[in-house]
Length: 495
Image 1 (cartoon, rainbow, N blue to C red):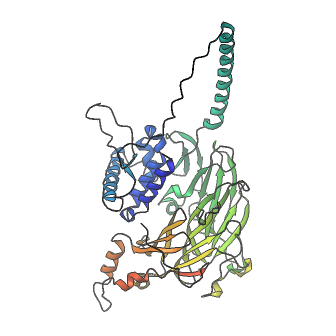
Image 2 (cartoon, rainbow, N blue to C red; image 1 turned 90 degrees about the vertical axis):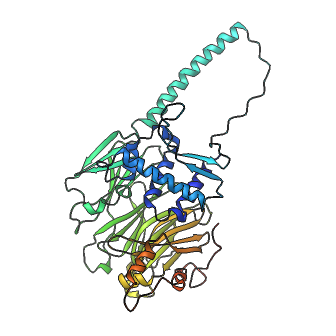
Image 3 (cartoon, rainbow, N blue to C red; image 1 turned 45 degrees about the vertical axis):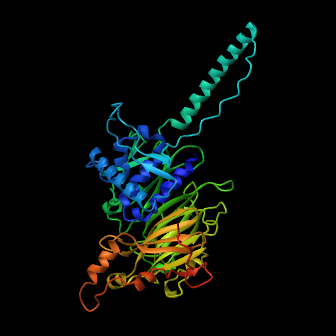
């Protein structure tokens, strides 16, 4: 069976309502799926580094076992409800000694069709039996010599290929200790380290070091580059820096986000990179980096396109913050689009913007607050620009809501809009759009939003339960650019 079938099933689970409020379990499932082809060598230490990159010193194998058990039960719940008709089932075999063989079960994750047979690659059909040829002694000797020469050639080619592809080992993970960044391979072997005398800004790396690192082939040569977003301690007057390292740890280039513009009125242009993604190479273009950076401490936001040498080749400015990025082919034309989510400051609303990577220029038009426009760079050309409604809870407690976590599958988009901003963003409302950006669903994920709403409005003159009218209002997604109507049309419910 095609591996994409398993990938589609994993995505279906990650996007389900059953996993909507289980961010840690979604992350664990993604980790297991990423290592599905090499799980015999997967160790708890590797899972810990991916699942808790900032807690590797305190987490143990027992913590991994606990999360595996939670994920096992969550998958069972999913397949008893939303996934009861799915063609593929995903299981987590218990890794305890078997009752019969008495050996350790090495598999972490298994995908099976409904008939219960584990998915394996189809065997090659047996060749039709042919009459055996008759060989002379000289022919046998000649064939043996040719075979020996071929083996030598294959051995040499294999050795060269192994040197190119496997030596040095490919960087896969990172860890920060004090003022040092250490890079490891998939087995947890240290490859190289870099020390930063100015240290690291603690709050910048607290949530997830993984979001500040990217590993991949930027040059199309089969070698892994490492991109690292660096922010020193006390960064009030310093911008973050994007640093590119080779697989051996050699620094290739540095890039600083933002630039001086007349709208800043002479204030220091201090920028922080908040999101990073890399566009896939095509027949016509090499990979390009997409970097989203905000002017500290609030707005505007720069979306910059960089070439593989760290040179800015295009930029778009947004009056607000686009703190999350996703790349995907939304219209089936074989070319990825840029999807950014965050806040539109002039509207005080969560927003989503779609950009054509070949038309990245200018700035957003702010009809509600023209004084917030970045006019010095001209008018931008978004493919799509949406605004998400604010709940009564958000309006009562905060200045804005915020869109985050866009995920894309086969042209459809799912994201969350966070209605509670502090102390940490939460109270999610889940949105899903089908291809063509017709709204399929808008609902409060889990009980977090409902519970927060109930607690806030349980007493006082404004006390009221969450009404059907309030919930229906979530579907009124306003379209500023790219639609034929003011509000996004409703599509058919997903099945």
